[in-house]
Length: 457
Ligand code: GCO
Image 1 (tube, helix red, strand yellow):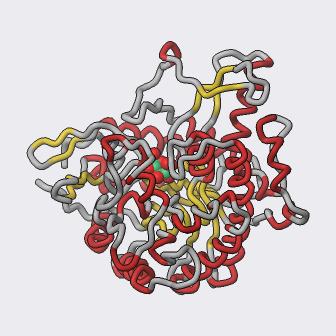
Image 2: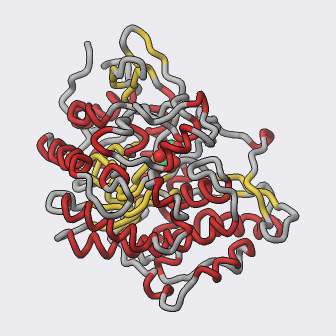
Protein backbone atom coordinates (compact mmCIF):
# COMPACT_ATOMS: atom_id res chain seq x y z
CA UNK A 1 0.00 0.00 0.00
CA UNK A 2 1.90 2.97 -1.25
CA UNK A 3 -0.14 5.68 0.44
CA UNK A 4 0.73 4.66 4.00
CA UNK A 5 2.79 7.19 5.96
CA UNK A 6 6.51 6.43 5.81
CA UNK A 7 8.54 5.86 8.94
CA UNK A 8 12.22 5.50 9.66
CA UNK A 9 11.44 3.14 12.53
CA UNK A 10 12.50 -0.41 11.87
CA UNK A 11 11.81 -3.68 13.61
CA UNK A 12 15.55 -4.04 14.20
CA UNK A 13 15.59 -0.86 16.32
CA UNK A 14 13.88 -2.84 19.09
CA UNK A 15 16.28 -5.77 19.19
CA UNK A 16 16.25 -9.33 17.97
CA UNK A 17 14.22 -11.09 20.59
CA UNK A 18 11.64 -8.36 20.97
CA UNK A 19 8.04 -9.62 21.19
CA UNK A 20 5.47 -7.89 18.96
CA UNK A 21 1.91 -8.60 19.96
CA UNK A 22 -1.69 -7.50 20.10
CA UNK A 23 -3.95 -7.62 23.15
CA UNK A 24 -7.61 -8.20 23.94
CA UNK A 25 -9.73 -9.45 26.82
CA UNK A 26 -12.39 -12.14 27.26
CA UNK A 27 -15.47 -10.04 28.02
CA UNK A 28 -14.59 -7.43 25.43
CA UNK A 29 -14.46 -9.85 22.48
CA UNK A 30 -15.82 -13.32 23.19
CA UNK A 31 -19.61 -12.92 23.31
CA UNK A 32 -21.39 -16.28 23.83
CA UNK A 33 -22.23 -15.11 27.31
CA UNK A 34 -24.38 -18.14 28.09
CA UNK A 35 -22.82 -20.73 25.78
CA UNK A 36 -21.52 -24.11 26.86
CA UNK A 37 -22.49 -23.81 30.50
CA UNK A 38 -20.79 -20.48 31.20
CA UNK A 39 -21.77 -18.82 34.49
CA UNK A 40 -22.59 -15.13 34.74
CA UNK A 41 -19.88 -12.60 35.33
CA UNK A 42 -20.26 -9.24 37.04
CA UNK A 43 -20.06 -7.59 33.62
CA UNK A 44 -23.02 -9.66 32.40
CA UNK A 45 -25.12 -8.48 35.32
CA UNK A 46 -23.76 -4.91 35.23
CA UNK A 47 -24.58 -4.45 31.54
CA UNK A 48 -28.00 -6.07 31.89
CA UNK A 49 -29.08 -3.87 34.78
CA UNK A 50 -27.62 -1.31 37.09
CA UNK A 51 -24.64 -0.21 35.07
CA UNK A 52 -24.71 2.90 32.93
CA UNK A 53 -23.28 1.81 29.60
CA UNK A 54 -23.16 4.02 26.55
CA UNK A 55 -25.80 2.94 24.04
CA UNK A 56 -27.08 0.39 26.61
CA UNK A 57 -24.52 -1.95 25.08
CA UNK A 58 -23.38 -5.29 26.47
CA UNK A 59 -20.92 -8.07 25.68
CA UNK A 60 -23.54 -10.74 24.82
CA UNK A 61 -22.15 -11.06 21.30
CA UNK A 62 -19.25 -8.58 21.23
CA UNK A 63 -16.86 -9.68 18.43
CA UNK A 64 -18.08 -13.29 18.52
CA UNK A 65 -14.46 -14.25 19.15
CA UNK A 66 -15.71 -17.40 20.87
CA UNK A 67 -16.59 -18.74 17.42
CA UNK A 68 -14.12 -16.80 15.28
CA UNK A 69 -10.89 -17.17 17.26
CA UNK A 70 -9.18 -19.17 14.54
CA UNK A 71 -9.63 -16.65 11.73
CA UNK A 72 -8.99 -13.76 14.16
CA UNK A 73 -5.66 -15.28 15.14
CA UNK A 74 -4.88 -15.55 11.42
CA UNK A 75 -5.27 -11.76 11.26
CA UNK A 76 -2.73 -11.35 14.07
CA UNK A 77 -0.24 -13.29 11.99
CA UNK A 78 -1.18 -11.55 8.78
CA UNK A 79 -0.32 -8.17 10.32
CA UNK A 80 3.10 -9.51 11.24
CA UNK A 81 2.72 -9.94 15.00
CA UNK A 82 4.11 -12.98 16.76
CA UNK A 83 2.19 -12.84 20.06
CA UNK A 84 -1.40 -12.55 21.19
CA UNK A 85 -2.38 -11.49 24.68
CA UNK A 86 -5.82 -12.66 25.78
CA UNK A 87 -7.57 -13.33 29.06
CA UNK A 88 -9.54 -16.23 30.52
CA UNK A 89 -13.13 -15.81 31.67
CA UNK A 90 -13.27 -17.26 35.18
CA UNK A 91 -17.04 -18.06 35.06
CA UNK A 92 -16.63 -19.80 31.70
CA UNK A 93 -14.25 -22.25 33.32
CA UNK A 94 -15.84 -22.41 36.80
CA UNK A 95 -19.51 -21.40 36.42
CA UNK A 96 -19.94 -21.38 40.20
CA UNK A 97 -16.63 -19.60 40.75
CA UNK A 98 -15.25 -22.66 42.54
CA UNK A 99 -15.99 -26.38 42.48
CA UNK A 100 -17.28 -27.94 39.30
CA UNK A 101 -15.10 -27.32 36.24
CA UNK A 102 -16.98 -26.64 32.99
CA UNK A 103 -14.93 -28.68 30.55
CA UNK A 104 -16.50 -27.06 27.51
CA UNK A 105 -15.33 -23.64 28.70
CA UNK A 106 -11.84 -24.90 29.41
CA UNK A 107 -11.80 -26.65 26.02
CA UNK A 108 -12.38 -23.31 24.31
CA UNK A 109 -9.14 -21.91 25.75
CA UNK A 110 -7.40 -25.15 24.89
CA UNK A 111 -8.44 -24.76 21.25
CA UNK A 112 -7.46 -21.08 21.28
CA UNK A 113 -3.98 -21.87 22.60
CA UNK A 114 -3.54 -24.62 20.00
CA UNK A 115 -4.75 -22.31 17.25
CA UNK A 116 -2.18 -19.69 18.28
CA UNK A 117 0.65 -22.20 18.38
CA UNK A 118 -0.31 -23.81 15.07
CA UNK A 119 -0.29 -20.39 13.42
CA UNK A 120 3.05 -19.35 14.92
CA UNK A 121 1.57 -16.89 17.44
CA UNK A 122 2.78 -17.06 21.04
CA UNK A 123 -0.07 -17.03 23.59
CA UNK A 124 0.27 -14.56 26.48
CA UNK A 125 -2.44 -15.23 29.02
CA UNK A 126 -3.96 -12.82 31.54
CA UNK A 127 -5.67 -14.74 34.33
CA UNK A 128 -8.05 -11.96 35.31
CA UNK A 129 -9.28 -9.14 33.11
CA UNK A 130 -12.34 -8.08 35.12
CA UNK A 131 -15.09 -10.66 34.44
CA UNK A 132 -15.48 -11.93 38.01
CA UNK A 133 -18.03 -14.72 38.70
CA UNK A 134 -21.32 -13.20 39.85
CA UNK A 135 -21.96 -16.01 42.37
CA UNK A 136 -18.79 -15.05 44.22
CA UNK A 137 -19.61 -11.36 43.91
CA UNK A 138 -22.81 -12.17 45.80
CA UNK A 139 -20.53 -13.21 48.65
CA UNK A 140 -18.59 -9.95 48.58
CA UNK A 141 -16.21 -10.56 45.68
CA UNK A 142 -12.76 -9.05 46.10
CA UNK A 143 -13.80 -7.50 49.42
CA UNK A 144 -14.17 -10.97 51.00
CA UNK A 145 -10.84 -12.41 52.12
CA UNK A 146 -12.06 -15.85 51.04
CA UNK A 147 -11.22 -14.65 47.53
CA UNK A 148 -7.63 -15.76 48.22
CA UNK A 149 -8.81 -19.37 48.22
CA UNK A 150 -11.27 -18.92 45.35
CA UNK A 151 -8.62 -17.32 43.17
CA UNK A 152 -6.05 -19.98 44.04
CA UNK A 153 -8.45 -22.70 42.91
CA UNK A 154 -9.27 -20.90 39.67
CA UNK A 155 -5.62 -20.28 38.79
CA UNK A 156 -4.80 -23.89 39.59
CA UNK A 157 -7.48 -25.20 37.19
CA UNK A 158 -6.38 -22.94 34.33
CA UNK A 159 -2.62 -23.35 34.67
CA UNK A 160 -2.84 -27.11 35.19
CA UNK A 161 -4.63 -27.36 31.86
CA UNK A 162 -2.80 -24.81 29.72
CA UNK A 163 0.60 -24.64 31.39
CA UNK A 164 2.18 -27.29 29.17
CA UNK A 165 1.86 -24.89 26.22
CA UNK A 166 1.46 -21.40 27.70
CA UNK A 167 4.63 -20.03 29.29
CA UNK A 168 3.83 -16.32 29.59
CA UNK A 169 1.34 -15.47 32.32
CA UNK A 170 -0.03 -12.24 33.73
CA UNK A 171 -1.93 -12.53 36.99
CA UNK A 172 -4.05 -9.37 36.69
CA UNK A 173 -4.98 -6.72 34.22
CA UNK A 174 -4.74 -3.28 35.79
CA UNK A 175 -5.79 -3.69 39.44
CA UNK A 176 -6.10 0.08 39.61
CA UNK A 177 -8.92 0.07 37.10
CA UNK A 178 -11.14 -2.68 38.40
CA UNK A 179 -10.55 -1.92 42.09
CA UNK A 180 -10.74 1.88 41.92
CA UNK A 181 -13.32 2.32 39.16
CA UNK A 182 -15.37 -0.71 40.21
CA UNK A 183 -15.35 -0.21 43.99
CA UNK A 184 -14.80 3.51 44.68
CA UNK A 185 -16.04 5.36 41.59
CA UNK A 186 -18.76 2.85 40.70
CA UNK A 187 -18.80 3.33 36.94
CA UNK A 188 -17.47 -0.17 36.22
CA UNK A 189 -18.74 -3.50 37.56
CA UNK A 190 -19.57 -4.28 40.31
CA UNK A 191 -20.61 -0.62 40.56
CA UNK A 192 -19.73 0.04 44.21
CA UNK A 193 -18.97 3.45 45.65
CA UNK A 194 -17.39 2.63 48.94
CA UNK A 195 -14.06 3.56 50.47
CA UNK A 196 -14.13 0.46 52.66
CA UNK A 197 -14.76 -1.80 49.68
CA UNK A 198 -12.01 -0.12 47.68
CA UNK A 199 -9.48 -0.61 50.49
CA UNK A 200 -10.51 -4.21 51.22
CA UNK A 201 -10.49 -5.14 47.52
CA UNK A 202 -7.12 -3.44 47.00
CA UNK A 203 -5.45 -5.45 49.76
CA UNK A 204 -7.00 -8.76 48.71
CA UNK A 205 -6.08 -8.19 45.07
CA UNK A 206 -2.50 -7.42 46.10
CA UNK A 207 -2.40 -10.66 48.09
CA UNK A 208 -3.89 -12.52 45.13
CA UNK A 209 -1.06 -11.27 42.93
CA UNK A 210 1.22 -13.36 45.12
CA UNK A 211 -1.22 -16.30 45.28
CA UNK A 212 -1.53 -16.31 41.50
CA UNK A 213 2.21 -16.04 40.86
CA UNK A 214 2.89 -18.90 43.28
CA UNK A 215 0.34 -21.23 41.62
CA UNK A 216 1.60 -20.43 38.12
CA UNK A 217 5.17 -21.22 39.17
CA UNK A 218 4.07 -24.47 40.83
CA UNK A 219 2.14 -25.69 37.78
CA UNK A 220 4.10 -24.35 34.83
CA UNK A 221 7.63 -25.37 33.98
CA UNK A 222 9.77 -22.42 32.83
CA UNK A 223 6.99 -19.96 33.47
CA UNK A 224 7.48 -16.28 32.74
CA UNK A 225 5.27 -14.68 35.39
CA UNK A 226 4.17 -11.10 35.55
CA UNK A 227 1.22 -8.84 36.03
CA UNK A 228 0.10 -5.65 34.33
CA UNK A 229 -0.39 -2.12 35.57
CA UNK A 230 -1.74 0.95 33.92
CA UNK A 231 0.84 3.65 34.46
CA UNK A 232 -0.63 7.13 34.58
CA UNK A 233 2.02 9.77 35.18
CA UNK A 234 0.51 12.66 37.13
CA UNK A 235 1.22 16.30 36.53
CA UNK A 236 0.08 19.62 37.96
CA UNK A 237 -0.05 23.11 36.55
CA UNK A 238 1.83 24.71 39.45
CA UNK A 239 4.72 23.54 41.58
CA UNK A 240 3.72 24.67 45.05
CA UNK A 241 3.78 22.46 48.13
CA UNK A 242 0.02 21.99 47.75
CA UNK A 243 0.48 20.92 44.13
CA UNK A 244 3.13 18.41 45.10
CA UNK A 245 0.98 16.96 47.86
CA UNK A 246 -2.04 16.75 45.58
CA UNK A 247 -0.02 14.89 42.98
CA UNK A 248 1.55 12.53 45.53
CA UNK A 249 -1.85 11.66 46.97
CA UNK A 250 -3.56 10.84 43.67
CA UNK A 251 -0.47 8.97 42.51
CA UNK A 252 -0.53 6.87 45.69
CA UNK A 253 -4.25 6.10 45.43
CA UNK A 254 -4.21 5.05 41.79
CA UNK A 255 -0.67 3.84 41.14
CA UNK A 256 1.55 3.03 44.11
CA UNK A 257 -1.09 1.23 46.21
CA UNK A 258 -1.10 -1.52 43.57
CA UNK A 259 2.59 -1.59 42.72
CA UNK A 260 4.64 -1.27 45.87
CA UNK A 261 3.19 -3.80 48.36
CA UNK A 262 4.25 -6.70 46.10
CA UNK A 263 7.80 -5.35 46.15
CA UNK A 264 7.77 -5.35 49.96
CA UNK A 265 7.41 -1.56 50.20
CA UNK A 266 4.11 -1.46 52.09
CA UNK A 267 1.25 0.95 51.44
CA UNK A 268 1.98 4.60 50.65
CA UNK A 269 -0.24 5.90 53.49
CA UNK A 270 2.02 8.84 54.34
CA UNK A 271 1.34 10.40 50.97
CA UNK A 272 -2.35 9.49 50.90
CA UNK A 273 -4.41 9.90 54.09
CA UNK A 274 -7.30 8.20 52.27
CA UNK A 275 -5.44 4.89 52.51
CA UNK A 276 -5.07 4.90 56.30
CA UNK A 277 -8.07 2.60 56.79
CA UNK A 278 -6.38 -0.19 54.85
CA UNK A 279 -4.72 -1.38 58.08
CA UNK A 280 -8.06 -2.83 59.11
CA UNK A 281 -7.72 -5.52 56.42
CA UNK A 282 -4.11 -6.50 57.14
CA UNK A 283 -3.46 -9.77 58.96
CA UNK A 284 -0.22 -10.92 60.61
CA UNK A 285 2.11 -12.33 57.97
CA UNK A 286 0.51 -10.45 55.09
CA UNK A 287 3.57 -8.25 54.69
CA UNK A 288 5.54 -11.37 53.77
CA UNK A 289 2.80 -13.23 51.88
CA UNK A 290 2.18 -10.25 49.63
CA UNK A 291 5.69 -10.23 48.19
CA UNK A 292 6.26 -11.36 44.63
CA UNK A 293 9.45 -11.72 42.61
CA UNK A 294 8.05 -10.83 39.22
CA UNK A 295 9.81 -12.01 36.09
CA UNK A 296 8.30 -8.99 34.41
CA UNK A 297 5.77 -6.25 34.80
CA UNK A 298 3.47 -5.23 31.98
CA UNK A 299 3.29 -1.46 31.66
CA UNK A 300 0.08 -0.17 30.06
CA UNK A 301 0.18 3.41 28.97
CA UNK A 302 -2.55 5.59 27.53
CA UNK A 303 -2.32 9.06 28.99
CA UNK A 304 -1.05 11.37 31.67
CA UNK A 305 -3.38 12.75 34.31
CA UNK A 306 -3.71 16.37 35.34
CA UNK A 307 -4.19 16.82 39.10
CA UNK A 308 -5.07 19.94 41.09
CA UNK A 309 -5.08 20.64 44.83
CA UNK A 310 -8.38 19.96 46.56
CA UNK A 311 -9.26 21.24 50.01
CA UNK A 312 -10.42 17.85 51.33
CA UNK A 313 -7.69 16.70 53.76
CA UNK A 314 -8.29 12.99 53.05
CA UNK A 315 -7.69 13.51 49.35
CA UNK A 316 -5.50 16.62 48.98
CA UNK A 317 -5.90 16.48 45.23
CA UNK A 318 -8.36 15.67 42.51
CA UNK A 319 -7.93 14.50 38.90
CA UNK A 320 -8.81 17.34 36.69
CA UNK A 321 -9.16 18.18 33.06
CA UNK A 322 -8.85 21.83 32.23
CA UNK A 323 -9.68 22.94 28.74
CA UNK A 324 -7.22 25.78 29.23
CA UNK A 325 -4.38 23.34 29.62
CA UNK A 326 -5.29 21.02 26.79
CA UNK A 327 -2.27 21.55 24.63
CA UNK A 328 -2.50 18.10 23.10
CA UNK A 329 -4.54 16.16 20.62
CA UNK A 330 -7.54 14.41 22.22
CA UNK A 331 -8.62 10.84 21.42
CA UNK A 332 -12.20 9.57 21.18
CA UNK A 333 -11.91 8.64 24.87
CA UNK A 334 -11.17 12.28 25.71
CA UNK A 335 -7.57 11.37 26.55
CA UNK A 336 -4.63 13.60 25.71
CA UNK A 337 -2.03 12.19 23.34
CA UNK A 338 1.31 12.50 25.12
CA UNK A 339 3.81 10.02 23.70
CA UNK A 340 6.69 11.00 26.01
CA UNK A 341 4.53 9.77 28.91
CA UNK A 342 5.38 6.24 27.72
CA UNK A 343 9.07 6.96 28.18
CA UNK A 344 8.29 8.42 31.61
CA UNK A 345 6.16 5.39 32.59
CA UNK A 346 8.87 2.90 31.59
CA UNK A 347 11.64 4.91 33.22
CA UNK A 348 9.69 5.13 36.44
CA UNK A 349 9.09 1.38 36.62
CA UNK A 350 12.71 0.72 35.78
CA UNK A 351 13.76 2.84 38.75
CA UNK A 352 12.18 0.31 41.12
CA UNK A 353 15.01 -2.16 40.34
CA UNK A 354 12.96 -5.02 41.80
CA UNK A 355 11.61 -5.98 38.38
CA UNK A 356 14.11 -7.39 35.88
CA UNK A 357 12.06 -6.87 32.73
CA UNK A 358 9.24 -4.72 31.42
CA UNK A 359 6.82 -5.26 28.56
CA UNK A 360 4.44 -2.72 27.16
CA UNK A 361 1.37 -4.93 27.43
CA UNK A 362 -1.09 -2.26 26.22
CA UNK A 363 -0.83 0.96 24.29
CA UNK A 364 -3.20 2.31 21.68
CA UNK A 365 -5.89 4.84 20.95
CA UNK A 366 -9.50 5.23 19.91
CA UNK A 367 -10.19 7.49 16.95
CA UNK A 368 -13.07 7.64 14.50
CA UNK A 369 -12.27 5.55 11.42
CA UNK A 370 -13.02 6.51 7.85
CA UNK A 371 -14.34 3.66 5.79
CA UNK A 372 -13.96 4.33 2.06
CA UNK A 373 -14.34 1.70 -0.66
CA UNK A 374 -13.47 -1.21 1.57
CA UNK A 375 -10.44 0.49 3.11
CA UNK A 376 -10.37 1.81 6.66
CA UNK A 377 -8.31 4.97 6.93
CA UNK A 378 -7.01 5.80 10.40
CA UNK A 379 -4.07 8.12 9.91
CA UNK A 380 -4.34 9.52 13.45
CA UNK A 381 -3.92 6.04 14.91
CA UNK A 382 -0.84 5.47 12.73
CA UNK A 383 0.61 8.78 13.95
CA UNK A 384 -0.16 7.74 17.54
CA UNK A 385 1.68 4.41 17.19
CA UNK A 386 4.61 6.02 15.37
CA UNK A 387 5.09 8.60 18.11
CA UNK A 388 4.76 6.08 20.95
CA UNK A 389 7.10 3.56 19.36
CA UNK A 390 9.68 6.34 19.05
CA UNK A 391 9.41 6.94 22.79
CA UNK A 392 9.70 3.23 23.42
CA UNK A 393 12.82 3.10 21.26
CA UNK A 394 14.25 6.03 23.21
CA UNK A 395 13.60 4.19 26.50
CA UNK A 396 15.36 1.09 25.18
CA UNK A 397 18.31 3.22 24.01
CA UNK A 398 18.43 4.68 27.52
CA UNK A 399 18.89 1.17 28.84
CA UNK A 400 15.37 0.34 30.06
CA UNK A 401 14.95 -3.45 29.66
CA UNK A 402 11.78 -3.68 27.58
CA UNK A 403 11.12 -7.11 26.08
CA UNK A 404 8.08 -6.43 23.92
CA UNK A 405 5.17 -4.30 22.85
CA UNK A 406 1.48 -5.22 22.60
CA UNK A 407 -0.98 -3.03 20.77
CA UNK A 408 -4.39 -2.43 22.30
CA UNK A 409 -6.19 -3.80 20.44
CA UNK A 410 -6.36 -6.52 17.80
CA UNK A 411 -9.84 -5.36 16.82
CA UNK A 412 -12.60 -2.93 17.78
CA UNK A 413 -14.42 -4.34 20.80
CA UNK A 414 -16.63 -3.67 23.82
CA UNK A 415 -15.03 -0.71 25.58
CA UNK A 416 -16.62 -1.20 29.02
CA UNK A 417 -18.84 1.73 30.10
CA UNK A 418 -18.22 3.34 26.71
CA UNK A 419 -19.87 0.48 24.84
CA UNK A 420 -18.95 0.10 21.19
CA UNK A 421 -18.43 3.77 20.40
CA UNK A 422 -14.66 4.14 20.87
CA UNK A 423 -12.80 1.96 18.38
CA UNK A 424 -9.33 0.84 19.45
CA UNK A 425 -8.68 -1.88 16.86
CA UNK A 426 -6.03 -2.41 14.23
CA UNK A 427 -8.84 -4.37 12.63
CA UNK A 428 -12.23 -2.77 12.02
CA UNK A 429 -15.28 -4.78 13.11
CA UNK A 430 -18.70 -4.24 11.60
CA UNK A 431 -20.81 -5.20 14.61
CA UNK A 432 -23.89 -5.93 12.46
CA UNK A 433 -22.20 -8.43 10.18
CA UNK A 434 -19.04 -9.31 12.17
CA UNK A 435 -17.00 -8.58 9.04
CA UNK A 436 -13.37 -7.76 9.82
CA UNK A 437 -11.28 -5.31 7.79
CA UNK A 438 -7.62 -4.62 8.53
CA UNK A 439 -7.23 -0.86 8.97
CA UNK A 440 -4.43 1.20 7.48
CA UNK A 441 -2.76 1.06 10.91
CA UNK A 442 -2.75 -2.75 10.69
CA UNK A 443 -1.04 -2.54 7.30
CA UNK A 444 1.36 0.03 8.71
CA UNK A 445 2.40 -2.52 11.35
CA UNK A 446 2.59 -5.18 8.69
CA UNK A 447 5.12 -3.09 6.82
CA UNK A 448 7.07 -2.21 9.99
CA UNK A 449 7.20 -5.85 11.03
CA UNK A 450 8.23 -6.86 7.52
CA UNK A 451 5.46 -9.37 7.23
CA UNK A 452 4.69 -10.82 3.85
CA UNK A 453 2.22 -8.37 2.45
CA UNK A 454 -1.30 -9.51 1.68
CA UNK A 455 -2.64 -6.02 1.38
CA UNK A 456 -5.27 -5.11 -1.22
CA UNK A 457 -3.85 -3.60 -4.40
C1 GCO B 1 -8.02 -1.05 30.32
C2 GCO B 1 -8.10 -2.39 29.78
C3 GCO B 1 -8.66 -2.49 28.41
C4 GCO B 1 -9.25 -1.24 27.81
C5 GCO B 1 -8.21 -0.34 27.21
C6 GCO B 1 -8.78 0.90 26.54
O1 GCO B 1 -6.94 -0.57 30.43
O2 GCO B 1 -9.03 -0.45 30.60
O3 GCO B 1 -6.98 -3.16 29.92
O4 GCO B 1 -9.62 -3.45 28.66
O5 GCO B 1 -10.17 -1.59 26.85
O6 GCO B 1 -7.33 0.08 28.18
O7 GCO B 1 -9.44 1.70 27.47
